[in-house]
Image (cartoon, rainbow, N blue to C red; front, side):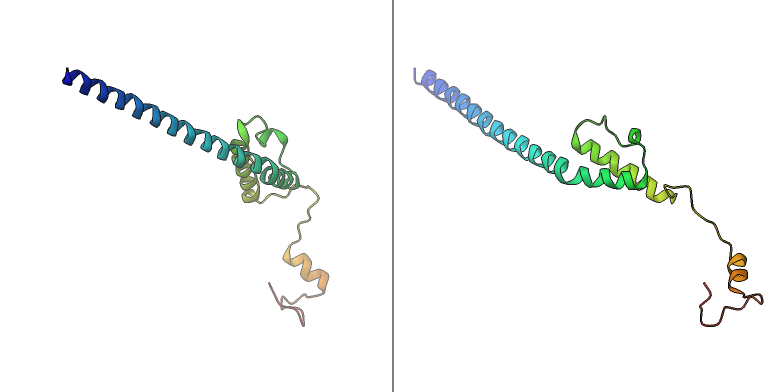
Length: 123
């Protein structure tokens, strides 16, 4: 009989320990979910509007902004990649730029001999 009581006590301890572990891990999971929700809320409130404004300034089309992304983390990632790609391309978002050559500038300033104009540095 003592062997049966010992086995039942060991089995009871295992069940009790497994229940305590499950409760502990569920609590950790709730804490992680709460932290993730806070981070996502901050991203929606603080980060995404700034990235959206930057994308507007750069003229990035809405279809490249990741509006159908799953969650704010994916949206921030897609926006950041689109902004970085646009900035690295070096293209201006408008078409009314003017291209001026060095000779045109020298003619305009009256410098025909190729020397820098008096009082100005040559760049």
